[in-house]
Image (cartoon, rainbow, N blue to C red; front, side, top):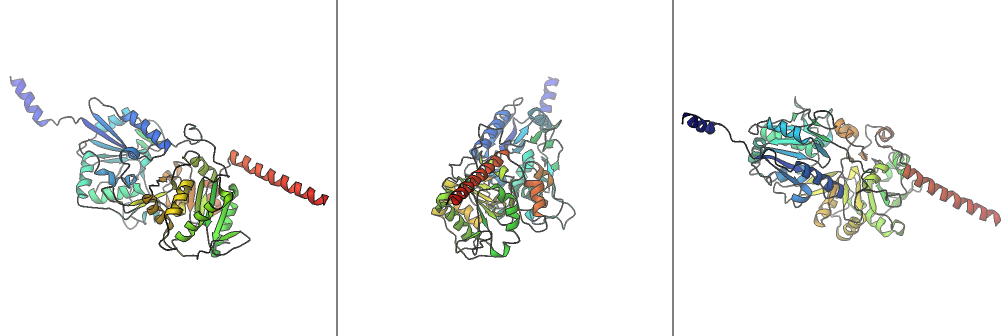
Length: 474
């Protein structure tokens, strides 16, 4: 009897083991290869661990109607609050399940815990509004590709602080930085930069980022995209013909076939196309819509599947862009680029995504057809990328994000973040050598593209030769 009483007393003071152990959110997009990778993660993680529940959400499926789910905050109120830990991953994240579970079992969910792979800015950066350089401590923020973890206590604290809030920020630019900054401001909790959350696989990693090999995944990718299938429209104006266009023509433009430069007057040396749209100092909505309409109306572009709009100070890697396009459904409405957001609300109903213009905006033909038919600019100097974002939301055109696109210069990003996958674009020439950036970070020789260019050159050479023979016979 005494032993039974002691056992009952012990039960009163011993905390019961939670059956709701781990809630996983995969921040996925509705494109074939991300859907496939997400489902593989779900199958790996969705199982009971010694009677403890693991629940998995896929953003593209379970939060399809939530705007701004990629910024994390609009989905927090949708999560069940009883789990010990909350793990956020990308489709490209790999998990050593047993090690991860053992690590989490050793942690106390009733503490304010925030784990992940920490990134830090080495210098003031515009994409983070130069935040933190007037303070002693820099913000350490999580690389989403390596995954990050909230404890139950931290999630509840965040929800408590946001209980009466409708929105957090007007703009969503870099969600990983904005997440860490907001969590710290709300709860005084900093990211615990844990070395076992990794960007590259090594011994004892709980999670790590694994770059998607586009060319090797033949189930979703091919080699169908050629220079015949892509149109490039470059926005410029007369003041930049000599100072900017020269860089583009000597770098990435050489890898294209259909490229046109749109300016405020015809410069036959470039040459440029004058659409009759007045140049503006900002916005450029009129010019962008004019370019899209121009491209759709010309028969020589009838075989074009993708339309790229670039600034005259944007550097691109054409071979890497084509590899991504080869993995996307060209017959569906979609926009590709570096995704920003505006006006997201915490209930997930407000706001919209948009492709930030400086990184390069890529449109499928069905998307362009509907945009030019159904949307227009409030004024010619309205922000083109944001107007396109509002239009895309109204027409249910998804804005697909690729972390290979960059709105700013290389020095504006964490080195670890840049190194995780080969970049496709950078923007702005001030303070850099564009040739050096292109040569070191973007240039790549693609044998497939090179063979295409040789075929075109050979065909042109034969035509000139035939014309020369006919001329001599006359």
